[in-house]
Length: 362
Image (cartoon, rainbow, N blue to C red):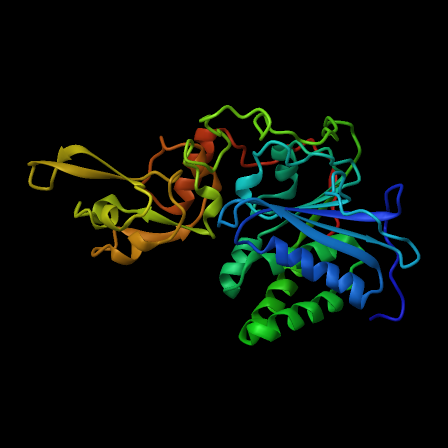
């Protein structure tokens, strides 16, 4: 443990500094919260607690992790969810459109998002009334280091907090992985360091351009008290909308029509009926079922189709989160072209508002 405890940058009326991690299953937010709390309590001398909230333990299901810390002379006597976080970490692009994501966010809340977008543009897309917005491409870092996004996000959170000791978190990561996965210690330390160093943090001028986010507790329209018998839950990610985009770990299959022989092996191996066939003509001009391409709303990125394709008509490319918004897009082309087509279709701007006043501080 450190000889002295760093001072908290700000606290609520109870003396607590509170963090909330919004994530999905398999990205490691639960473990990230646990490691961060251990570093703060056991190595920096704070009083603190952490716990997570999630439903079915299934890849792609929503997960919230909470970390709450206070000074050593302050008693921590609550285990309720963090409703007004001082720091909010968003672990996945697919969460950005979910209702209630920014509940309790205030102007002094620091938001850290796992995205390749510019922080100014990210603030506009989220409509977040915050003065500090940070982005880090944690998914790219994790893919390159062959780890998960949680340690990259821990690096970004550590830097953005202003009081968490990076070495305390590194030591906790090493201790956590050494017990069961010693070979993963060094890759995860590198992932943490890259998340810390590659965070882009922006401080905005307070111009009053955004409406404050609601501080009321988010309540879903349907719950155990009012859900009708046999009623359908219409939230994204279930069997009604079939949005599996939040399950992907950074890759999707890219379709090359000029190489395809319409053999159907991809369709036979796909566990989620992703591929679309329609009536057409084969290369000899005879009537045949011809593949149009994958519907990315259904795709969870298992890459089995890429492995089984005999002619490399399907190749691995980086995921574009916007693909779950529509299936009526041109599915053939280089990743850069595909990205621009999709973003134009769903109305997502590619450049931030030039009138926004800000400065980069990290």
